[in-house]
Amino acid sequence: MNKKTLIFLVFIIQLINNNLFTEDIIKFEHITQKHGLSQRIVYSIIQDKYGFLWFGTRNGLNRYDGYRFVVYKHNKNNPNSLSNNVIRSICKDKSGNLWIGTWGGGVNKFDIEKEQFTHFIHNPEDKNSLRDNFIFKVFMDSQNRLWILTRKGLHRFNIENKTFSYFTHNELDPKSISSNKVCSILEDTHNTIWIGTFNGLNKFENDINGFKHYMIDTINHNDLNKNYIRSVFEDNSKRLWIGTAKGELYIFLKKEERFKPLNVQGEMISKKLKLDTISCFKQDQFN
Image (cartoon, rainbow, N blue to C red; front, side):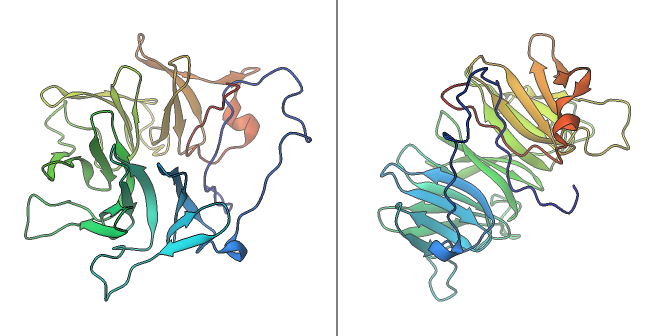
């Protein structure tokens, strides 16, 4: 990545050949620290069941009602406050509670009714605790299971009985996850879990069969960013889109189990757009 910091990328998957995207239609309103946002770098955005927007920043959790912000931060004198102010990811469970992945403070559950945080952090004296406090992403699947992506493996948390399952790389086990550094996740329309790691794409089969690995480049092992899967997305046509830390864009063909680069006039679209990295995808109502 060059000196320009790419916070996130919204990539329009299909270009619509009409006059929809004109200067008269696309308008941006800037919400900044002048309006009460606690920090200009925003890692995660989610909307709760009441319509509030929540922003995870490098300096606190922000709730926005369209007019003003309420900011939640760590308070050493309050054990029910946020455990760490650097928030990398937010998701919500079926009850409407927020689950927050922090960079250094583990995972927090936020009860939006009581406005209290419950902490799940690494305890070196407890082998059944979270194994890493630095969280890349938290994700709630269709079965209301929380997946936690860390530098030290993939965790799955049962929010009912508060127990962890751990998935780590083992060179002697081909069914183990391909890397302990896990940064992206997707549940597709068939409820299959796909995991993007620092070393390839993983398909989670089940607890017994483990993971199936897919590599973009199996030859040039010196190019570390080639297989660094930064984002995974399924579009409305059930196609799987893959974005890498190298800024390359692929369609993963599930039946053929291979990556198809997205090219324009024989050249990868990432080179045309001069992308540093592809952090996320979003498909709008117009496809």
